Image (tube, rainbow, N blue to C red):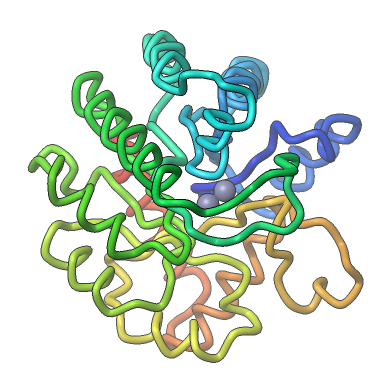
Length: 274
Ligand SMILES: [Zn+2]
Ligand SMILES: [Zn+2]
């Protein structure tokens, strides 16, 4: 049995083929999935999917990239955090996420004036902090996004950390950074492994040194299509989790079944599912 701990199943590309995508995932052994929100709309859509499909759960939150809405449309993002709080009442919402810090200069983005400024980083930090506090208040797990901002991410985590988050948080799509791994080991944070493990040697070397007890798997679909499907430019989907498991099996020299069992158990712990 497999657990896709991070997919954007509610994104537009999947809409016309959602039944097929879920069927293919089940056929591949993916029993449970977390549909991860990135803003108000996609968080609500994640809940809608969780209500419709067995085995699908939701995570709600404002992704740091979308914190830019604050500048782009003069929206006070703190109000959006208030709307996220309302969604946390739903028992199918298992986590807050994806939330965190992001300094990647996105070229393809709906925000035409997108720019990483100090003011933007400050608001990202504020919105991240507020959402961490919500996770603790409502006893939800935490899905942490970091891209090129590990220093800021760790700073905000340190300021808001509580023992509650031990075994209840994940560095999703974890960058190969020793500082992140050190924090993860000290504070019992799971490490999310994605499709890039199938083609990125540096990522393989990084993951190889981490105990299996710390790993969970995720597709981050529709993004990050794993090898061998990558060459066909195929959109990624939860069924492709098997390629990540196969790669882990090869680099850890244990059976795929063992990888499945351990990561499934880890995922249940992460999302407090018993
Ligand atoms: Zn992310
Ligand atoms: Zn994501």
